[in-house]
Length: 241
Image 1 (cartoon, rainbow, N blue to C red):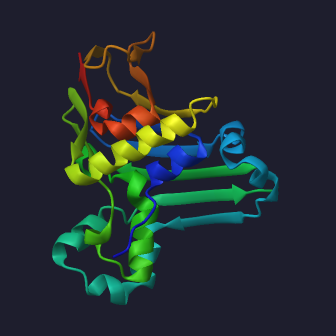
Image 2 (image 1 turned 180 degrees about the vertical axis):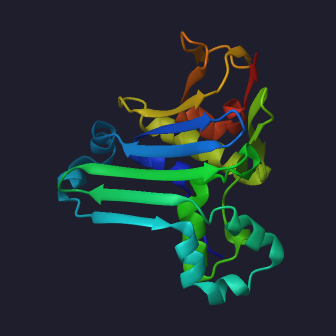
């Protein structure tokens, strides 16, 4: 059975800053962008002497639908339920830059949407592209939570649902062990949520969230290690005037 190193788990072992930005229009449409940048100081501490010997280069851009087309034979064999999942990603744009020479490691995922409910869980994009390429079953994934969104013009929700409690427990133990091993390091592991709305914000469910002076944006920073151990801290509700 295949086990992919999920996007968020890769981030926790390399040291990274993630920024998730959503900009919503009055009609409910909008754009979501997830950007992950490797923090070089953190990664240098984690990799030690191997840091300077690293040799990697990748500079690629693709739209997820290109994988559906290229691996149409694999896609055609999927059950309808999995085709629905993959089709949710078809318009996602991916930009990946990995350069050990320039010390730049950055992944960007962008999706335009007509309604918030159609937003894909962008953190799984690369895993799912690999699934299509190698004809892997989604049942073999080690993802343990899903992220979805809702917006009706007044109420916005970022919803995190645990889908595999056994896998969650395993990840909690892995993160706890990682924390013990790296307790003396000064690592950067953060996920920042930035949401921009067409009207003023009336209330936000998370007390640590920061509302902009014009009350049309909200900003929240979460420690990734805490997020991996308890993904539901990423739940958020915003009510507009």
